[in-house]
Image 1 (cartoon, rainbow, N blue to C red):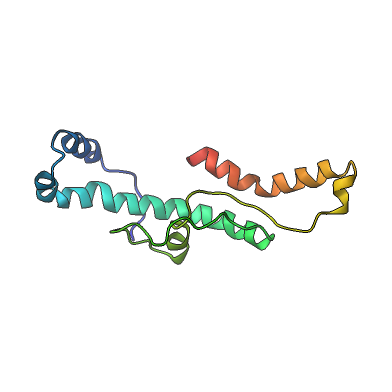
Image 2: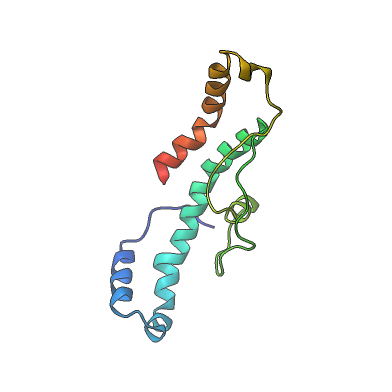
Length: 134
């Protein structure tokens, strides 16, 4: 997989033509354009985004957080993730995190606000990534 350099300018022209000619025959005739202007750049984009997200998720998992629930059984057809991480997280229906633990004694004291704030701070990198990119 090559480094993501942005989407090619031809992308918008291809999509405009596809909107006007949304038929199997037209698409078959323009499959190479689809691969060049849409598919390959999209895979590079997902790979580039995934590297940053992977660091965030690995840090959260090392802190004991879980990462959502798998929603899909297999990856999208014709998509070849470049890493096991990308392949794994494409199976999820979204980005979420959680932590399971016994009810802490601090729940029954004013300290619960600091306890909660600390957890929000730990998951904040994931929140910032979502707000920035999605």
